[in-house]
Length: 404
Image (tube, rainbow, N blue to C red):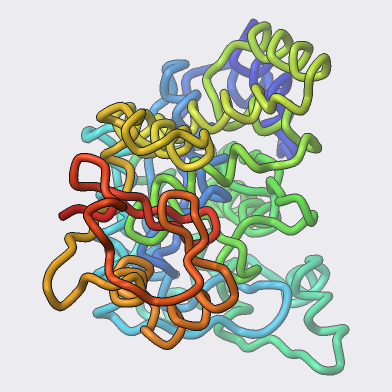
């Protein structure tokens, strides 16, 4: 199977400026642009990153562009203008994204920042050399811009309107300076990407290409992203690894086959087998567990993946404290019982990051348990509550270890 056939079979290709077999029929320089509008990538970004990883493994040269210049503007979205970020925030985000990309793609990735040329390009030079190749008629026909203009309660600023020209200029610059002749991205960037293809053809009479991967959506049909409020962050500080792992374990069956194809390196034959077994016993959620294991290992590493599995087993496996393995035990927060923190209320407030009044209210509503037994009135933890100096304190499905 060729790389083009593999990408089509996995559902990576949606829009193509030429047949994918033509685009990838020779070794290419391929770039993916990422604007530093946040300090972390999310699972929506992970699809084009997986595409880039596959292209790199197939022998194509991959270049990552972080938009230090375009990030100061922000690409147009379906409604409302993005909040403009200051330079200090952008610099912080760029450093964070570079570290994240290196963790996902490897330390030796080739990375550029479009601020290197956009910040040095004069306005008159840009309008003369780039702007004259685009017509307002053409730009206003693009879906997103047209929707914004057709909405009487919305508008689009010249800042956002110019984004497509800047992205086209990026492609032209990389084409001339680095021999990059293919751009990839998510399907919502399709018309912006065509700007670069057209600009290269009009200015240089040379051929360049682009193709997009589809936007992967959540269970409600919304694309993953910060603007939608459903971003599943790849940074463990913004989203703990256990919660990241659980997100994939809990996804519905709908779209599961697609997730396995785009988010893992399992072969198509392996995925077919996994889905067949899943159809026989969907309640076991084995396909979701395999997906969670693979994607957590990819994003956070094998050790973190095993810890997330251990925490899942410990939290939802119903094991008693003395039956936990060392890995399972390490998954729980530990609160030490001290003279000033020895009652159920004080320990619950400390362990669950709530106020004492909230802990007391939960207790009165039978929401606090000690070793599985509901505690309805505050009291000190007695030695008889402890096994080898430890006990489980529980609030809903959240458990912490008390240690004396």
